[in-house]
Length: 246
Image (cartoon, rainbow, N blue to C red; front, side, top):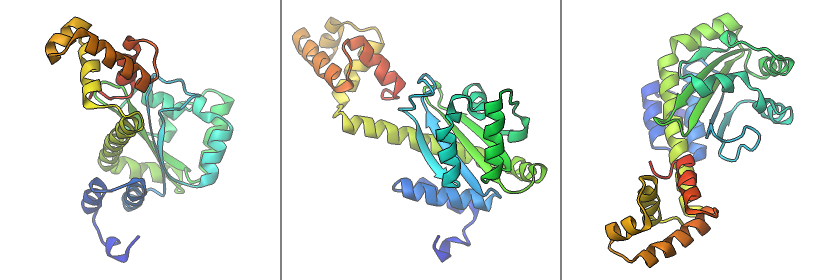
């Protein structure tokens, strides 16, 4: 961190976060913010909740903790039974780690490992997009004893919640941009898919766009190729899952 940034207040660091140019910038300012608020480690993950936990194709991460912890988490497939993630799928209330019930040996092993790797005390901040097509989870950790660390997290929950929301917005924008660019999806493609989602037929779309029905069927073919689907109705589902129409 540059020396001139050491004296920045938390609101000023948020301002810098909003103008971050890339993932490295995001991580830089997230680390500065969580440190200023009393946390020592963080992990942010966003995902499509409809996706199977094992595939994790839509997952995006920002990692601000010991690499060993992430390696253990992946090696043991704790993402399959993570109690914090389970909580976040259906809740938006920030919660202390000690308040989340664990029921399996695997979950107990995960928590024991977390305690040894920078999350002796923890805080979980779930955030959802308005239609829940994508969710985010901000995990925060400290080496402080559980009661002491959780008291700090709880007192700063408003800031942590704001941070999680900004990170989800960033992740959503980034994911959408990557998909559009990598598949050469155009505004016209999305317009047609949006019409389909609203129940328009090919004839309806042709009339709305002032082209022939045959032209629309040609666009359907290109959309299916770009989206990697075999039927045009699957393109609508793909677009909804990946937030392309929002």
